[in-house]
Amino acid sequence: MTLQPPERDMIVGLIQAGVESGTERLGDMSQTEWGVNFSDTQEMSPVRVLSWFAHNQQDHVSAHFRSTSETPLELLILFSEESARSVTEAVTKPYRAGLGNVADLLCSTIGEVGNILAQNVLAALSDRYGVAIILSVPEVGQGTKAELTGAALEDYDGRKDTLLLAHMQLHSERLNAECSVIVIVNEAAMRALMSREPRLPPAA
Image 1 (tube, rainbow, N blue to C red):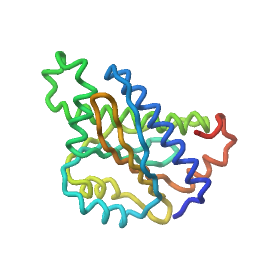
Image 2: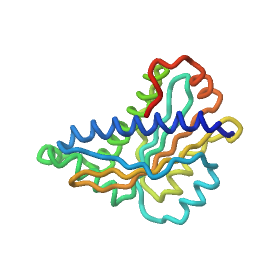
Image 3: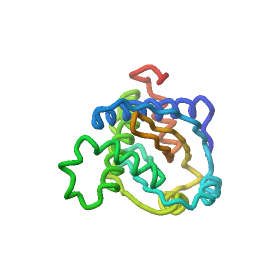
């Protein structure tokens, strides 16, 4: 299904506002200022996304979330392994002395970073429309971009769902990481949500 341009722009604005808010939290954690540059956000079909990602055979680390509320949606956050290591180094450096016993610091950190970004995206949506949207705990995976995305798209239904793909660059004085975010929303539920009287003005 296809969103109308104003609907798509509204969701994109909320995604970007949520990610920007998330980077502020991550900056506090890492004791350094983070920035984010959005290169593109598109509505795409799963076939096109998987075809595009199939050319990238690098290992990636992902955090996958599902909503457990009345607004069905999913988020998949993907970092290349190199970017995941850069993010892990940036976030954990101030606390490295106390993290020596963490079994898989890379996956644990990406799960937490993904959780912060996802929760802030949902907070932007929840705050605007006055609804509670609860996410599952992150499912952290490792594999190629196409493998991780394919697994996350198993429940996608093209008759009722819309897929948005966002690309961004996270950066700070000790970080340079590329990130892809896939948002899958139930179109009818999202339209019903956007038909409500907003509590807050649209995201800039």
